Amino acid sequence: MRALSRRLLGSPLAAILTLQAALMLSTSCGSGVGDSAAESEGTYVRTSVASRTSNFSAWSEPVSLGFPIDATGFNDQQPALSKDGLSLYFASTRPEPSGLSLTNIWVSQRACDDDSCPWGTPVSLGPTVNTSVSDFAPVLSRDGHYLFLASGRSGGGSQGSSDIWVSRRTNVHDDFGWGTPVNVGPGINTAGFEGGPAYFENDDIGVPQLYFNHNDEPSNAGGDIYVSEQAADGSWSRASPVVELNSAASDQRPSVAHSGLDIYFFSNREGSVRDGSGALSTDIWVSTRASVRDPWSTPTNVGSPINTSLPELHPFIFSNGRTEELYFVRTVSTGDNDIFVSRRTRGGRED
Image (cartoon, rainbow, N blue to C red):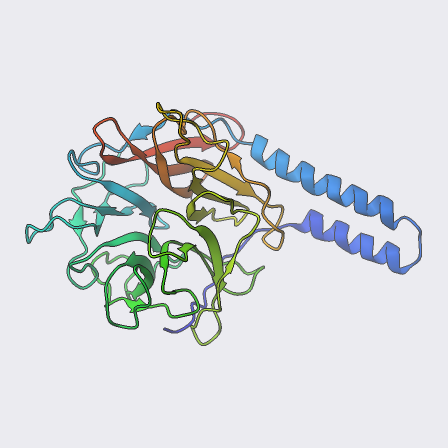
């Protein structure tokens, strides 16, 4: 697979970079103010992160996407939107046209990117992408040419019980123009379980990154968040754990914001809401950083109204102008997995 060359524009951090440059200059000149400048820089970074977070309104009460996305009696999960917000990819156990009920990847389309345009009837991506085993966790590259997914399929270089695969299309507006998926290779995939891919690309980093969850065991019941970087030849480096995000519990399905400064995932770590039996349920958690070159902060629970005593899973963060939308899955009282969305706006005002 050829390297993804397109880079995201933006992520300006001029104030931080200017301060860092001033600190280096003052230190080299022997001004004796290096310690105080460093302390000021740390204060600035902490303040900027807190300010960015407080610049949003509270998350709105989540609402189910409803019919035809959430189908009664089936699991609908792992949502991901196209960059223009007009296509919704997700995994579902609803029956394929062949009549088989599998976990496969479906897509729904709409005419505009707000609630005035309803989602259309989902359509399976068909046999080019889907197989007779589980195919799930779809996510698009920023340029829309690549679809990453997890699958338990065999052959084609498969490594374990679930691997990450990638498909390419030429026309970014053709949701059914995907080519046959290709295994992303041993830099990412192992004899264990890999799933929940999240693609991130940014000029400041210089190379595409793929975040995902990995379990040494061949099971999706646990694991940690890992990251790999793509080389110029298209191969992926040996993945490494993102230690600041991981815990002794299960940490899965990361989703990186467009800015690269926020990452969402789900976990049943300590601090999650307890269910009716007193056990820790899975909640949505978030971590932030001051720049794309900085380490992630200690994750925090996103709290109510998103997290409840029911399981919340599979977050996907989507930026739409002044609004951020957090899509996620909740296991509802019927036992089905349904897709929900919550919103918040910049400036602390609800739309």
